[in-house]
Length: 316
Image (cartoon, rainbow, N blue to C red; front, side):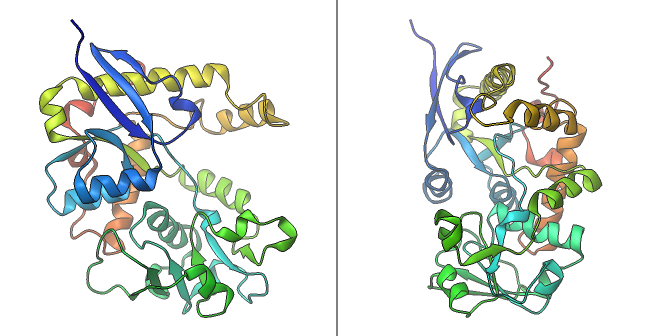
């Protein structure tokens, strides 16, 4: 007789390549899907029993009373966001301080990348989100609270930037980046992105968490030990990826860069569990959401995760 099964949906990362298998009697199958498709499925139809999800959107759902979704402190995707600010090659803007009073476009005002970017602008550069005017494009996942200078339009914001209708664009993936270097018409507002990111780690100790693993309430009722089974599966898969040092054989200087990064992050740049460091990073994002008027009250880390998961550790 076979045991219970569950599919978990997420992104295509090296550290999840070995995740599928039997853990604590549950047959877990990892299914790769485009992340935007997953996020829309969660928000619109509650589609997935378990999946990777936007951490900021999860916090916003909990603020709005969602009791059907629960988080496990597994953080499969982190990213610095200093590279998300773009201006035209001929723009007079030379750094974050020049954004004051400007019109900035963003595809989705509530996406985690935008929340982190606005928070970093305030923390690292002293430029508050309210110092700018904002324009977003198309359907927005969440509405903002009153007091946010945001206009929602049905236009191509990258075209708006190129044609001078907005001053800057906050986006992780402009189409312009896909062009050969000599044909690009946009540039990063922050000239030396990696230095800015390394300064942020040095000064604030933060490698921004963007995504978290969530479980639907009915799946938790069906499989009460699913949170620990998933934590174990992710931790073991990541440990195998670290052991193999995936990526170092493909890129020139890969091993040297690997060693430098692991030294910078104390041996693990992407820890799971509510370690003191992870707590501080999640709390920072929650504080940014409150400051940016995307949640109505301050959120506390313990209230965001299933009680039994707060003590989960990769060493146990």
